[in-house]
Image (cartoon, rainbow, N blue to C red; front, side, top):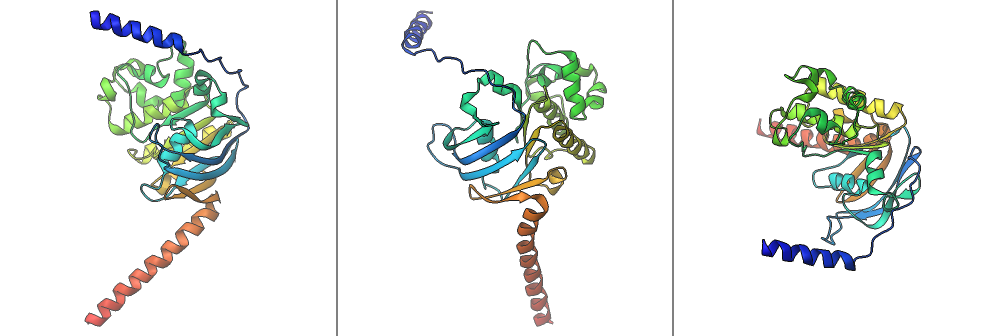
Length: 284
């Protein structure tokens, strides 16, 4: 008890010495574009760049598929775009305003995030979808579930939206957790939605629901960033960004970029098959 009181006193003295930051001016809701300008980012406090020199712009209604080999910086780019990782150089802007110009609570309403490793919290499905917001309405929660095409799945659970999912969502399957997390990302109709490998645990029905959800965001004028390993996740995007060794290698219309990426791979595959065939002929 004495140690706790002393610690509390030290914290009070420290907080007195820190000036209070003024709340940023409230900006209008973003509705036009996402701009990434010369972005270089890495883990907080590590002072190590994992992503460098990324530049692109997406207009409202656009969707970008981020592709590349493993450890190429795809998930790191997603974290930097959301402001989870700091921008050591360059900036991420919504309608021209850098992320640090937004009040954190206000910015949170305009972005949705489905991480690669889904994390749900002990509570009901409804609480997880609305991010445990105290002022959440039933209409907004159900709307998010319908946007993620998961409403019917939830209604089939023992207590529907009031089903307790346990710590980490232990009572749900991996696919169910991923689809509930997608509904959480779509809650409140955010302008920017970032999905990191959103179909890693989905079956064919779940992938179809994911594609429809992405198209729904685009149709209402939102922007979607999809980090993808499986080509099926790119079905509903119109732009593709290729990452390699932490740098942007290509960006543009999906057909154009995929053509640039797949053509060398096809040539390499054909050459490999030719070598194998020649080896078999030599043995014969």
